[in-house]
Length: 220
Image (cartoon, one colour):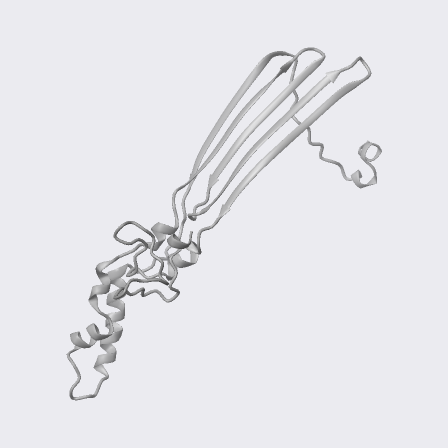
């Protein structure tokens, strides 16, 4: 039967997708709302904070000092300070916290259907808003569909199906995912006035310690 209706390619069966239709009777309203959240998971992988990173590097520099043979070599503390000032620990930026968020997903649907014995309608609308777990990402989508069914007589029927979807997506996280692991905690994302810092234009006397000189908070 499937081959007769849909051709030779349907020999193994077909899947028929039907759209929602209205039923005669009083107009029925259907409202649905779904809410969800999402968070990033990193397993057991963790990056060092400002003090852990300093202590790790200071230990390496201290080992380097042990191998110095100069009779005039400075003290171990002086040598470490000359290579890596402890003042770098005045800032302790958690770049992971800045890169990721608790993302909220919302879905709202409002549908109505009804009609008479001869004319029936179904009108469905939905709004979907999904925040990305990474900052600066997400998607919004609005859809609407109208289905009209009218019986001209016992033999002839008229169907009208109209639908439209509008989608808006955002994908501008400024490299947050990668930088959340490579940026150093010694660097600040914001200045004292709460303005994102541009690492490529640093004030005199201020150092950006990160290798890439990139701040996704500024770039996004």
